[in-house]
Image 1 (cartoon, rainbow, N blue to C red):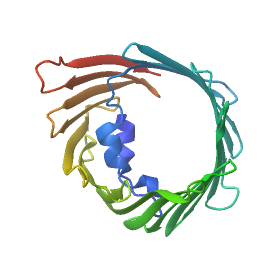
Image 2 (cartoon, rainbow, N blue to C red; image 1 turned 60 degrees about the vertical axis):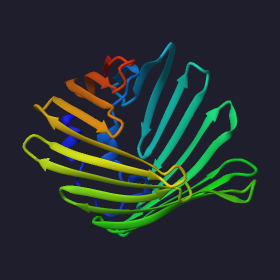
Image 3 (cartoon, rainbow, N blue to C red; image 1 turned 90 degrees about the vertical axis):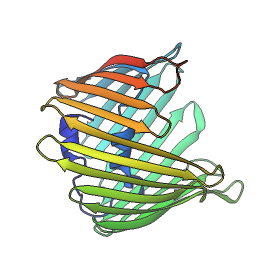
Amino acid sequence: MSPNQIATAAKVVKGPGLYTNIGKTARDLLYKDHQSDQKFSVTTYSENGVAICSSGTKKGEVFLADVNTQLKQKNITADIKVDTNSRLSTIVTIDEPAPGVKAIISFIAPDQSSGKLEHQYQHEYAGIAASIGLTANPVVNFSGLFGNSQIAAGTDVSFDTTSGNFVKYNAGLSLARPDLVASLTLNDKGDSLNASYYQTLTDLSNASAGAELSYSFSRAQSTLTIGAQHALDQQTAVKAKLNNLGIINALIQHEIYPKSYFTILEKLTPKPSRRAQNSVWLLL
């Protein structure tokens, strides 16, 4: 997360937003950019607004690459991506065909069962999303978040028409203030409980801190992760996190020019048999 993104992370938006927004600020703080994979990405923009992004990621001994093109025409956006596995991913978004409405259609070729149609509706007191797979026996998903910009509660369920069973049902609660966001969610069909907290510490240096506590009822196991971020200047930010297993992740990220970042990451594990992992990658 860049210094400019840090400054706007905790801003309260009008309405409760969508269910997927519950706990998002804490997740971005604790997990976004903290990756040990080596990644390189180059993005170019044409005069007519076409964006082309070429990226490569090295995971162990495997190198993955893709080319993503974004086309915009009025309120319609098309994202087309081709990867090294010869898959063609397409997402077409129609923004506000009616007030507060967004329509999204996506598919991955040659997978004929990957097609999905989604509708989103955001109101001052509600955020609703519904999607259905474009197959003979689709999976239907519905999520709703009701309340306002300060307090909201909702649910997220998926129903498999093939088996006639609910494959997902989650519930969540979100509390927000200008300088803090807290959330509580029940996931995995009631098997896991997740609580998160994010707070802006000071506006002068865009410093913030957050924590996430997850508990699995079936395994009787909990995981605690805490983290913080701080902007050294307008272009440079540092982030660090620590979990109850003793794993420490830290990074420093510098914005070379708009949407171009140079990042150094470090990961330390408590086991003496494992060495510290570090990587450097450039994101353009």
